[in-house]
Image (cartoon, rainbow, N blue to C red; front, top):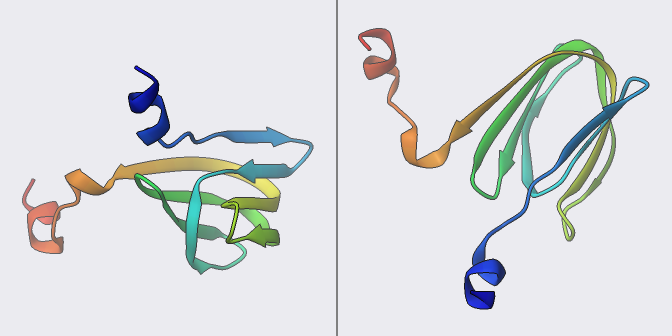
Length: 90
């Protein structure tokens, strides 16, 4: 059982007072003031909002701190990614 716990990546996201904290971030793929796209340990996360900005990113620990008004979150599991053509005809 302890072997299983050691192989599972943990992820957390907290949002308080226009401050968003995300863990298990491998890379910031793209960002602007309306959307931030993150590559996580298990897939990707799109954060949409208003006046978004990356305040801190520690690539070693995977911790990311953002500020701005959160509108939506969208997770995508890396195993379920579809090509652009398949997305249109799904």
